[in-house]
Image (tube, rainbow, N blue to C red; front, side, top):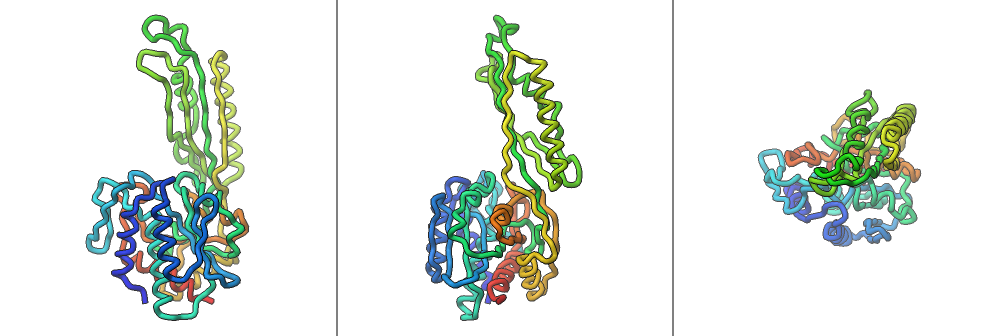
Length: 359
């Protein structure tokens, strides 16, 4: 039986373990200790991801990520009626530790009850928040499952991510020419001005129902009184439409060419890289059918909703694992206003238990 108070305690305990991206070791050790206590064999791959198994054939995979975004150090959770919140100086860490807590409670419950359960594998990845890095470096030779349930969605557990876009990041390195800003500015070529010229020509925000574009970071210059010789632009665009992605790529190339012609003595180097690729669930998708069946068994109605984000599920699908991402009771992800709704967290644990029980 799902133990509400134990679930809350587990969540509050693990969010107090600092695990910003790249610093997940203490969290990994905590997960390993808990899983081995439940009888799972655990392994670490070369990247530090945690993989566990009960050793039985034809398993299903349960997954979540270990890391959180900043500010995520020294989190102080508190229960306020039916919500768990931070003290407002940090995030709460529900992304993705609400998913981890629900998974652990589902496992604890079914083991305590001594019920028959499905064969299981579990994967806990590093550095998900900085581009699914752990999943992209996961040793898939350690995984035999062909279906995965990823506890990493926003909202209630009945909310299934029906589609996810392709994400393309871009970096531009601009080199101008330095000069003293007061004595001889005319001898300089401002990389910051060139960057501004590019940015004002790029699209911004939501371009259509399925496509977004964002310049997220600009850096440049060295000191106040020197014409900036270097500048960097970092951004991203996402879409479920391959036509839109190609169109934006061509648009970026044309803008860079136009600006380079305005400043022929400068250098503009651009690099595009795909972080994850799009998918859309279909009615005959095995993992989706399994989750929908489990949701109905606990009295919840599956709600398929598209997402503008990516999860480890994108990577699993590229490795021929039917994967579905479910909500984990978290709201306001990546903000100090983040909160977890306790009734939804209990539902997430019930779903995990139902999936494990489903043979």
